[in-house]
Image 1 (cartoon, rainbow, N blue to C red):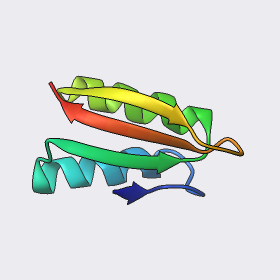
Image 2 (tube, rainbow, N blue to C red):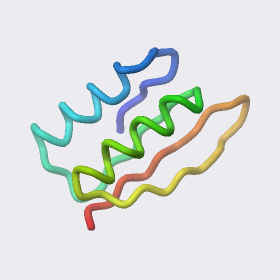
Image 3 (tube, rainbow, N blue to C red):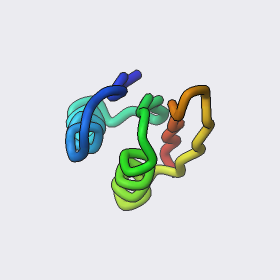
Image 4 (cartoon, one colour):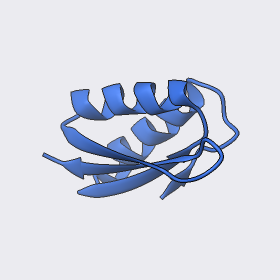
Length: 69
């Protein structure tokens, strides 16, 4: 799991990219706290071969579940 809450873009994408490149996970959860990060991480994940499910938690926090296609 990557906890990218409190980080401004592009850091959530960079952390996600680093984890994918290093470990090639079949599934990865990314926590973010702004809509921009949701969109940017989702686009990156889709382009990297992952489907993304977004779940809104509370107080504008989101859990993005990335699953390899």
